[in-house]
Image 1 (cartoon, rainbow, N blue to C red):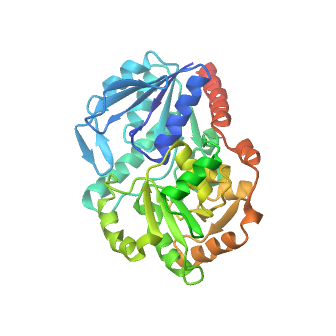
Image 2 (tube, helix red, strand yellow):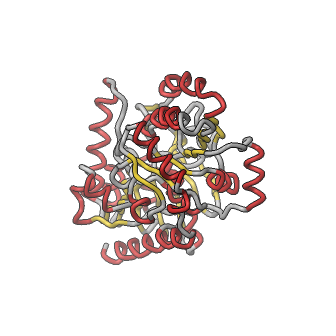
Image 3 (tube, rainbow, N blue to C red):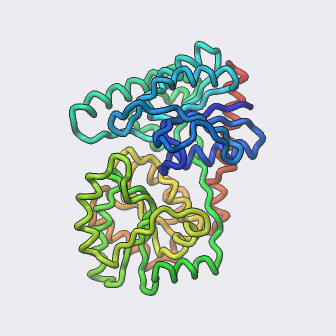
Length: 383
């Protein structure tokens, strides 16, 4: 099959959505399909066209930005040109261009499917007050015209004001999750590099972004240290100049300074470094605050490396813990509740650990790719 994947941001931008599409695209290539990714040239230093791991990436120049969105005048023409040479269009929402893509897919007689990754919640302001309903309306047009709609979990779908309108065409496909098996030598090297001599180590993998609830974990850490004075947080992921989050980072900087060596930023990690990060953590935490988080791939990555995970009690986000039993669910935005939950897992950690094979049977890139292949083939046959 010739598959056209479309999303606003793609690698090297880091987010759960970009990682999802990258893993899916690479998995589909390994399965023998042709994959093109159409996305924005959000950074002018990025090439307009390149091939990575067999995936053809086509980037469209950005004229200007609206909040976290981008305006690309040439996007429509580029999409129409690519549509002719592909069997199916796979849109990754939310994105402002979704409506135009779905309309053009219909005009060209191409089946389309969309994966709805999460709701959007923009910061207060006049511009965002205009932008938000425009994106929301475009997403609804795309969903109404698409032949199929995909969600990560049924839990998120039935609680989402957006997805719950399209349950009649909904397909639940678990997200692609993959992480190297951590090696003993790499785990030891990582511990030396980050001076891990005391316990417990609380890990968090995310962008430094408003919806992630980083301040809740920071407050919880201060409470935990009353009982566990050596407790520290290792935070892996982008934390400098995160797009649209500069003000949030400035607001939290005094908090991090007060925590001193008990809060460490490692920056973005990949491969064995990321696996070793998880293996060196006693527990990982995803204290997200709202429905812009729909799952949390990092939870499953942590579990695959043998480390329990704690998440907020949000639809979709709580599913990995509910599915595997490898962690606990904490109240949303409650630092005291989060602290108590973290300490409970740390004190009885062995009770929450499950075999890697048990986790990978529920979540893997191969499982996701196989289910998407079945859906693509079905939609192409019925087009």
